[in-house]
Image (cartoon, rainbow, N blue to C red; front, side):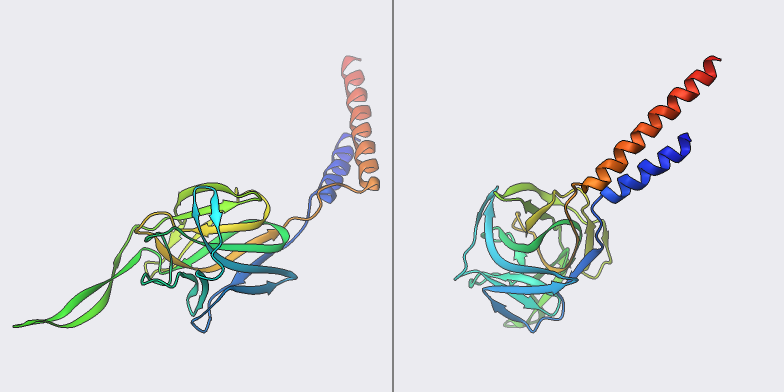
Length: 237
């Protein structure tokens, strides 16, 4: 009886937990264009991406000067200035803002151009100076920032990935990020620069059990109480 009662509670508790499958948004394969916003849909969830800047928890969206760049390797920020079209902290703290049409929990994120910095270097020195300049990649020290909620809350500015393939692609699991319908991923330090390849989220549905589920749970707890009482009486005898 006792084990059966626990089985009932386990079943009803499982029924009360919000159930949803993970959804991955793949941002690679862009045509190297910029726009005020970009929208993506997957598994019945739509996310709209805009660009902005942040200073602590203060977020400002520059809809007419900062654009979302959709490139072959992912999403970046184009500020219309001379810096690179990455999410970077050079000058301003770039931010990509993801607004979902449903409440989600962020599970993981992946990046491109991670820990790779490009600088102009001379590749052909001559008698009268440099004849050829090329952009040469070198290892960097990237970190990323996370903001969430409404109003915005800065979760941190020094997140590091869990894995890195050595070719600019990195990924991070982020199970502890609070549930929300908006998320900001940015760069805080001047040497941070990357693009966002993908996001994986979990849709959060209502966690309030139906009346029938509550009744089953109450009955289950009652069965546990009866079973415990009988076991106590039997032990005393």
